[in-house]
Length: 125
Image (cartoon, rainbow, N blue to C red; front, side):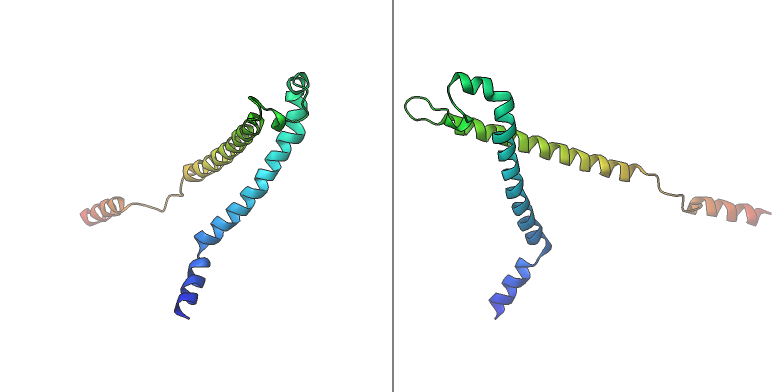
């Protein structure tokens, strides 16, 4: 029972659960980006180039008798889009943190030195 309880404790730590959620969301986001590439980018931007090559999808690009470099180009486009979206997300989070940190704290009252000066002045009187 000791090993099972240790595993349960490990699996239920916040970091492990956060990582699992991140991986699941990342997989779903990857599908969204792939659909964006195949259904939006390719038809709108790459259509003239693909029609010139007599192709319907970028993944069909081949060279030297079967080297599918179109799959590589598609993966690179996917990566660039994911990286850019993550960059914007992190940039927004950092900007929000800076605004939080930049907010001035309300003065808590006189400092210790000011209080000592006031006491000294009262004792002089």
